[in-house]
Length: 425
Image (cartoon, rainbow, N blue to C red; front, side):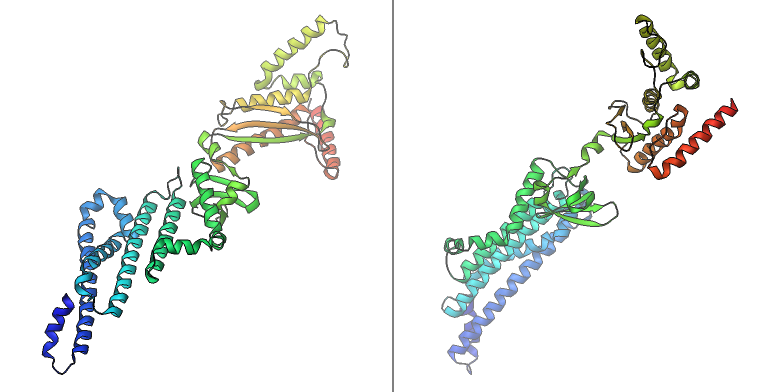
């Protein structure tokens, strides 16, 4: 025993009684024991930095070295080695005859060992989190956080068992009565962990996805996925934290499929004033035949209509036979115009269709996909398409629907435009 050896050294101090010499020897022995543990931790940490902190390791494994430094793994490793040293040197430095001191030191060393191993496991999880926690394909940060919670709980369980000198199973049995309280306290982590498993397992979400969730006012990019929350940076540069469980229990829209496809949909309607819809007369037909995009379409349709009317002996009447309309011709023009654009993805659905008439006119919907998902380019392409279609509508004697306040002005403008065209002829 080291304490007995120290006590023999103190035997020269004859002015001290045997009791005080024993206490002084025990105290010095414990101090030396603590100093040995401290120096062991520092030496292991220094050796670790000497090896892992070399330029060769930084060049060879830059991400791993950065993760080790960020998690302070070498420091916790040094403490863990010192804890192993403490276990092996405890019987040498701590005397067994001092019941009070021995009991205190045994608990202190036990708690120190548990704390060191807890820090080592948490540090290892931090290293893994730094390396793989922000994996855009499989968000593992929530899993690592659950691992930390488990480590903390186990460490707390062992520390309590050490303090009360009981086995961990005894503590677990006692805590089972308070299980409902723990379930209430850790409700969010448990629900978040379950939701995180569903999000990762079903690949519903990953870092970098653009999502919209109206119930939480989210419209932006996922920047982080943790145990209980998903952090979203909105397009106005604000941040919002969404509970992970809500992403499983409530609907949200993930735009990642659109981004991966490389095409984004345009789905917008032009409301046409139904009073401007009519059959094509000779003057309008002659004017529209000059448009290159639909000249072939008009030629084919005219021959088809004439053949049908001749076959059925249709008399010249607007109510008999088949006739071309300005809205149908405009729809054909819109389709031809979309097919002529290089900014439209022609491998996707592209059409112009009529929707059910409403009090706001006849909706003529443009349905197509742009060849890019870039937001700015998408908006420019969509605006250019509708700028053009609105501008050419008067050539077909069609006008968009307007509310009554502006409709009278629009009608007057149409009359003036017709008079101007008549005078030009």
